[in-house]
Image (cartoon, rainbow, N blue to C red; front, side):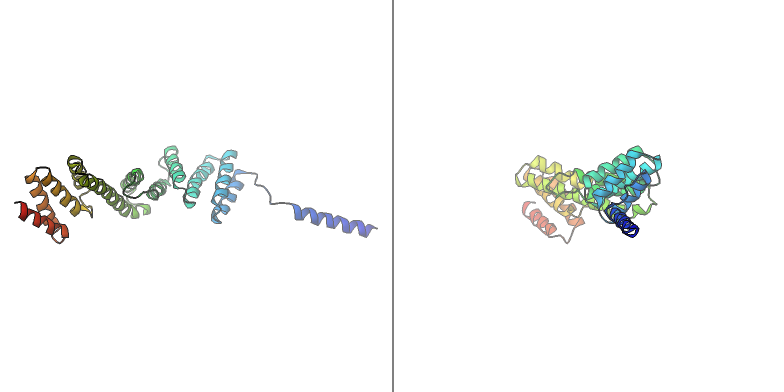
Length: 245
């Protein structure tokens, strides 16, 4: 009989052990570690919840600061770039001058960069990315994160220039001469290194010509020919100069 009771006791113990779930974290540090494991497994939403729980419990300001930053990282890794940008912005405002500032600025810039829309759409994200990468390059020129800043700045500027050209050509086609002149002139002034500069020169010159400004047309076409002698648009400009002048 004792043997039977002993066997039942062992069986009950084994059954109890088999139905016991994973131990729930009790401390902020334990929740943070759970979040890091979830992050490593690409379970980003579970990671965010665990980081938030660690912050709610609150053990130290340093742990909360780490969790706050990792929440933004988790949003970024999950391609939730709007939420990531908001998180990185808040971190920079709440914790200025921390050792992580260069990395956070870089991640903020990448969050904006990943939201950039086509040239015929709103360019707020492009401008935000440009300002952020310019700040990174200026404030932390020696940081490893600044190595990609120059390429990102160039890409943003070229995209904004392409947007200006798109709008300028829209007005050009609609024969809204003043608006076309304003946008194309702004492109040349603000983005002198734009790969679309030859197009800006040509359509600006042609708009001057159609709008009764021959001297400005000649000067613009001559700039096109001098700066882009091999461009097909330079050949068209020469043809117009011969025909009109």
